Length: 213
Image (cartoon, rainbow, N blue to C red; front, side, top):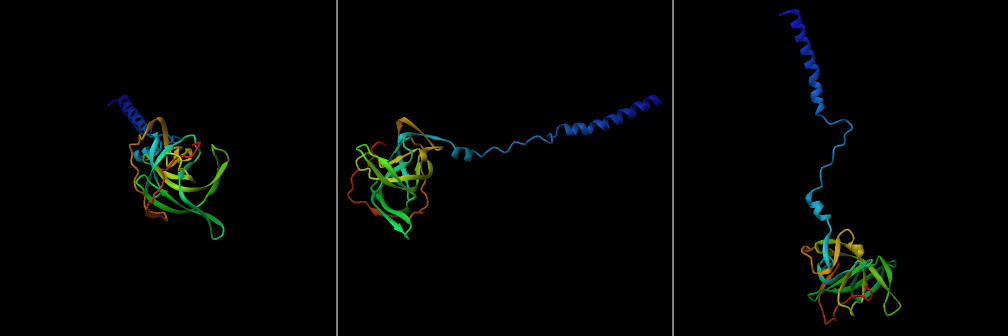
C-alpha cells in the first residue's frame, strides 16, 4: 500500500468516527422541546360532552330516583320542584331546615328533611312576591347527573312537577325547544343517602309549573 493510500484510509476512518454520534443525536428530541401530554381517555370525553334534549323530559329527583314530569327552561336561573307539606323549622337554634314531600309520576311519595341554603323571592304573575326555601337536591336528566339548587314551590295549578333551570343545565344539557322526550340515555339509580321515607301517596292533585316559568 502506498503512503498516499494509507493516508486516505486514515482520513476516511476519522471522518466516519466523527459522523456517527451526529447521526445518533439527530433523531433525539431537542432539549427545549415540550412533549405533548397523553390524550384524555374516551370515557372522560364522553362524560364531558353536552347532550341535546327536548324541552320536556322526565327528571329523576333525589338519591332514591323519584321520577317526575319535567320542563327544561333556559329562561329560569334555578330549578323549582312541586313540594307538598312544606314545614320550616330551626335545628339547634341556628340552622333553618325544611321537611317536605315529593310525589312521582307513579304515585310514589318520598319525605325529605334537609337544610335550607337560602331563600328567594319569586315575582308572581297575579302580583306580589312569594318567599321560597332553596335546597340542594341531586337530579338526573337524560343520563346527566348533578346537584341542583332547587326552590320548593306549590305548583298545583300547572302541568309539570319540576322546572330545571340554567344553573343545572349549564355545561351539561342543550335544549331543543322543537322536541319533547328526546332522551336516549337512562339515569342510573344512586345509592340511598338521603334521610327519606317512602310512603304510600294519598289522594293528591296534579302537579304543575309555576307562573312565569
